[in-house]
Amino acid sequence: MFILYGLGIMGLGFLIVYKSEWIFSNFGSSSSFEKIFGPGGSRLGYKLVGIAMMFIGLMILTGMFSGLLRWILSPLLRYSTY
Image (cartoon, rainbow, N blue to C red):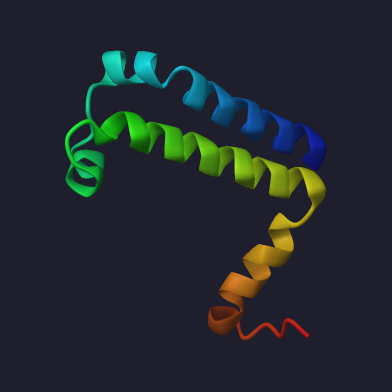
């Protein structure tokens, strides 16, 4: 089941990167991306979100995401990673 979730998230991330101009023309600029990356940063921000989604989808696909999530949240949950 994780294979389907991973492939779906990777596919959605790819579509965001591939169609970033379409997303920009339909949804407009994002003020937070423009503030961080400067003028024209919305397109870059959309592409970075898509690349991050592809990376997370790959981690879900290979089964590495749960280990990463446990490692990140271990100080809060008092979960030992050893």
